[in-house]
Image 1 (cartoon, one colour):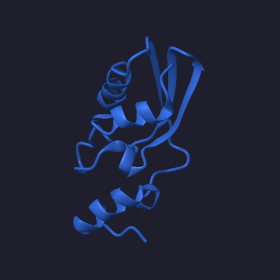
Image 2 (cartoon, helix red, strand yellow):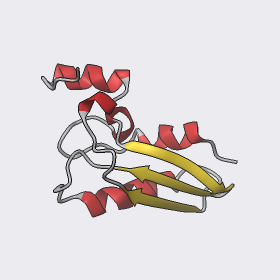
Image 3 (tube, rainbow, N blue to C red):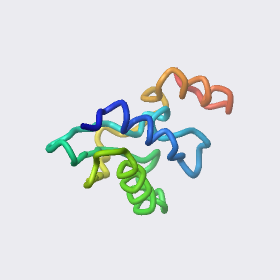
Image 4 (tube, rainbow, N blue to C red):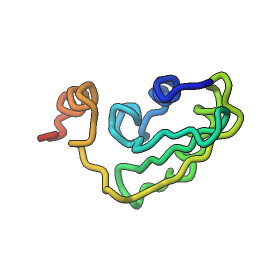
Length: 105
């Protein structure tokens, strides 16, 4: 049975097109849940509501999650609440954002 950690590790391969940091370290993935052993539900957001690549990002996340052994279905929900801000980034993400001059405090 796949684990949350395996899904998150896979999703670290998906990068935000505007900020060169993966979506996990950016803090864009809000929820990873398994309604069945072979299905994952993912709630995620984007850095901004007007992001033109939103649908493509959702599909990229879905396809990447399906690469985790044991998963046959991945449902990705794009959510806007709570709104993303740099404070949601992981510690690694905050280091990367700070290096790019983004305030994270």
